[in-house]
Image (cartoon, helix red, strand yellow):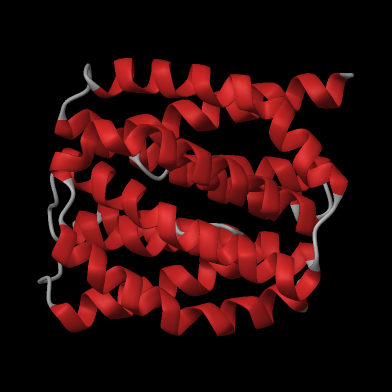
Length: 238
């Protein structure tokens, strides 16, 4: 029972972050889901629920999507997909958590140091490729895209809308690829169904939060999420 309550809390908070930031669900949920489920179930639950949050909410923010950038991300993600699936099929939980923790802390350090980069089509595709690898392997598309958006000073409206639109594609493709290559379990779909009411509540609360935070607060909020999750992953893997 305690595990189910913890699961519901994780999903609610992650859904709030997903709606208010565009990327928070997988970054927050994946580490904690790995405590409750085996890697395959944890990653596939994350894929399903992130996909749901994107599909439900995208119509309201469609006007903020950068479609040229979205197209480049999609092209890159398709190229990165096979490598991600190969990683997923040979996954070790301890190495996964260490790798995620280090990745998030490096990412946050670069953001805090005002990492900047000029946006180009080639870099769009490269970032999409890195994101595709991470999504199809560990269910986490956000870190490369977040770093890229922060490095190009993208406003929070465009960041959220384009990321959610991209998630609709990459999470669906990754879920189908994982299911086809490694299969799926009843646990994945039962707990995804249990989580659905909390996802919908999180979408509503997350939108209220988004309307009340400015760009500076949004950036600080991002740092706190990334640092906390990265440290937790490293500590819990020791």
